[in-house]
Length: 550
Ligand SMILES: Cc1cc2nc3c(=O)[nH]c(=O)nc-3n(C[C@H](O)[C@H](O)[C@H](O)COP(=O)(O)OP(=O)(O)OC[C@H]3O[C@@H](n4cnc5c(N)ncnc54)[C@H](O)[C@@H]3O)c2cc1C
Image 1: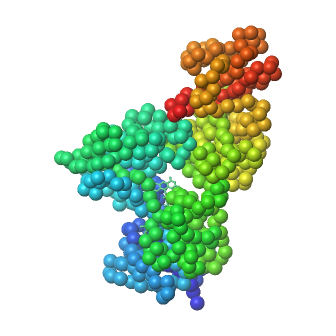
Image 2: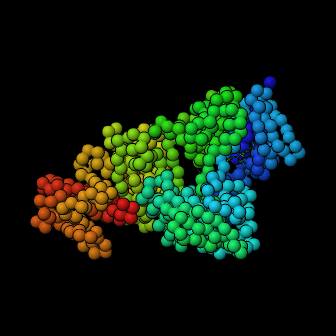
């Protein structure tokens, strides 16, 4: 007897589950129920299509009903909503355009995704607003822009989709404002890295308002007026809501499946729900964080695809498991990238690690090769075990490569000591002989073993700067003249030995250079001469960035 597999949701997790099930079982009867008009579309590509970066609409439609049905021999039911699950009868109830249909299943896979969170803004449901979740959403944005030629747009929410939408609007020549209630955009990222991204966005002509939320929305003469908690209001031609998502759990809850405290459907490694004949995958389910050991939500395409694959295999009786996530993500804006893997320092502390962090900033390729760009990195590690816990990075080039490598290192439970000796492909146009990750390993180890006498900019700015000390700038005179920290004494690294009498041995010396490397040389010299010297991690570049926050 062939197995009846029914899948609810036909995009990332659902379509992947169907494809995997079919590859493993040619005889299974596979049915996909999808509420929307499209199966397997590229939701991640929607902002780029809206902004005209992806020109052809067909490129975001990865499959049609016909191509999917043909390739995977699956029954695809579009514009069909699953409205109930009868676990006793092993049936799903669906609303099709022709009426109610009941389908039997042997194994059911729920992949309904997530729904938008509509923030509690007075009047929001009475004003026209756009979202960026479906092909229809993208179509209506494009249509509105073509017909109404809007001049301004306000995006509520400065997360991934808000930022990608802002870039799309910029490409359409629309003056755009992002409003984010948290103190910084991308609140789940390292704050300095998020700040670097915001500055890039602002330098491109987009206004970014952080730390204030929209309290009221009204329509007046074809415009929407948004009032903010700081008393300022914005009049705009277009409003986008991108204020996050929550798991779609209605079907699961009504079927009495276990819903976890995180708000997602509870599943085990096999993606089995509390009913062994029902699997769930994607944004609707909670995931195990492999670093903290705790369950959490993570609405991202990578996990959704891998979970769908796991559910599809198990549904046809081939054992597969999805161990969990560490949280790896990246967002781009006009050629600039900000990315994060694993835990931020604050998350690591909250999870009970004895965490510490360092800042580094190095060129993405050899500095003598034309076109190099700097990658700013924050490396988080456990002081006792030396385990790499997280990395955040921003920059124009090479951010993805370092974050992805760090993601592998974290999953392989590597330490920052291991980072020192990781072997990478090197030629001047691709990398430096000492890769940014090797350097992060050296600096983190110098901090752990004490050889670096490293302090973080936050410590210097908040604590050490208020004590009696010498602030020593070991860069060249020209660099110093271009911009130094207030009160800093300039003794160039190469001259330290001969100008040592300029540095007061009775006071602690806090050293900085551009990014920390020359500061390290200087601290080693001064320490061996008996000075109480410290090197400020990440140099003036990191100090200036952190200064804007502390
Ligand atoms: C604009 C945008 C950009 C994104 N960019 C990125 C990115 O760059 N990187 C990244 O990692 N992630 C990104 N994501 C997130 C990623 O797309 C999601 O994490 C992923 O699609 C989740 O997969 P899923 O299968 O769980 O849900 P979805 O892909 O949302 O699919 C769920 C489907 O189920 C259908 N459905 C729901 N309920 C029912 C029902 N009762 N009956 C029938 N059908 C139903 C829905 O219509 C929907 O089509 C982006 C998302 C969006 C919207």
